[in-house]
Length: 214
Image (cartoon, rainbow, N blue to C red; front, top):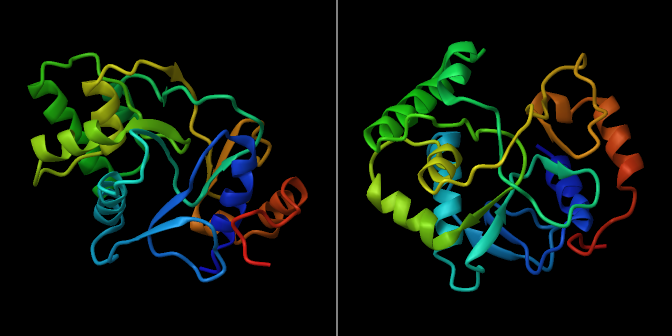
């Protein structure tokens, strides 16, 4: 892509209190003033994503608690803090999940791991909104479940009892999806190419930010 998503994601950080920005994986040349943690993107998108998070967690300069964001997450209004957001009961989500693919397989496998842990009232935290994690807990989980396919956010927040707020997902997939999200927004690759999306984000975040080379 042309990294339009990352550009608007970085601009939207003006709505979040933060200290430093870490980008794990690939980092475009126009980005400045961030800590880049290079990670080879050699596997599936889920495995790459987990590898990126673990690499960032091993970086000595990352604070113990940090906000995890994807490059297609946008913070649309000022937030003092971010609670844990979930989409309700995990089994209910599996039953109604529109995707019948690797994504659903990972969710089901994560549910089995939680069942084995005795967590029977698990929630589904796979939601396209930033979330706060603790790097030591992330690394502890990755060791405990090493070699097993996991959905990190759902495993993490259930194992550590984060609780949180039930919310509908804010990811947009097609031109029929309304873009008017007051709090958080996320875009699929297809949605990010739509002029309606680009125009909306350009209006909301017109100025280049601190993280963009001028």
